[in-house]
Amino acid sequence: MPYVEPGAGDGAPHYRENNGFRIPGDMSPASAKDAQKEADRIEPVLKRLWEARTWDPKSVRAAMLKLGYEEERTGPKGKRLGGTLTVREMDARFVTDHYVTPEGALIGLRVHDDACVTAFVQKTNYQVQTNGPYPEAGCFEPRPGH
Image: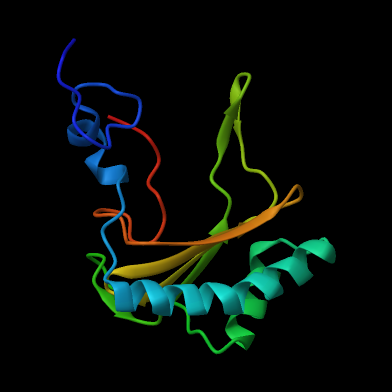
């Protein structure tokens, strides 16, 4: 049997090498604690929005800004210029023969350079979690690809 590296998702021999861009960075214990504190602030707001059937990005962004977060701004080459919050539409999914963008919003909050809160709210459910940033995509998990 070929060697399979630890943490190799589906057990493919080069999983981590091929999917490194999809593996979040590590959070320090202090950053993880701070990220969880922010996740705990966000969760009841998303629950309220979900129960009210309000999950469009504009409404979700407005609710997050009321918590005191500032929208993240970036320069022409992706350099971060300030702010910590990104709210955007859901990722498009391929259905049968075309792409469909589901209703809902994705939320990314950069708590520290090594800590994020990522969340979503959509028709069927909502979720809030903490994670380290992804090497090429910040707080949001990048799409699969190779």
